[in-house]
Length: 165
Length: 165
Image 1: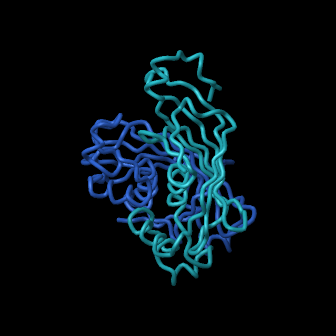
Image 2: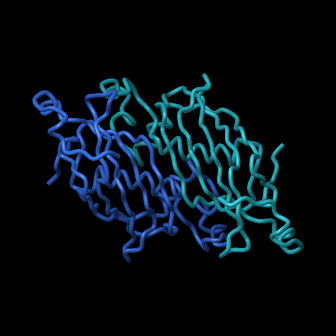
Image 3: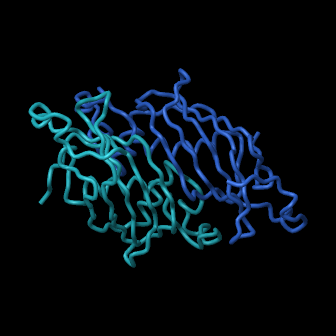
């Protein structure tokens, strides 16, 4: 069952784990043709001669998938969506066709937006792991999350558990 | 004319500017359907009700395009490709259909790889700008760049101008 989360429903330390998803060769090539057409992302044959010894996914595909896992595969939804403000990513291991990835992450910071009373900033620290539990990527993102319009009207900022990002 | 660059050809302060490229509505939607299917990235009609007031590109699309601009639209090529190690990105303004983006960036750090004599690390600091010169994104990436096999055999590490990343 999916749970709708507004900014008011988040707390520092809150964890999110996603259902695993397979990364197919076809998806790797489709992503890379448009967005990162280096030979080790688009051509399984010449990729064998690369430092990876075979086709690997673009890091941008894994980064985008990490946030997609949070939004679609973690049992939570964020009404109105989330908007990335900034992110730091480290790519630790190559992602290959057939790998099954999931994410494990937690909220590490929350603060209200000064310019927009309708939203708050959440910092999310995640690891993206393969089936063997190896970390293929770490990603920290600061995202704008919508506040609940109803709770916003009836409670002050002091009621929101906050930690400065 | 395109110039092939190995690690030995890079120096701190070296600048790269790309040819502008238009971001189309079709490309925004195609990217987002697979990678970031939030309504303000995939549906021009409901996107009007979002905080953006219309369709905007996924930040991951702009991030990937930034490195693609460096590799394909800056007049330089990197034989054997480049591999991202880590990156920090800030998204400053929304990217909308019809925006024409280009990148302006420079090498801000260079160091040889200890584990692989065939490659070095380059740090690249970039801004992605729209036609009006407004910064839509800043991106710093540390990337593995191939060394020149010929120069590698005939010169020691001391010959390479380096700065610790």
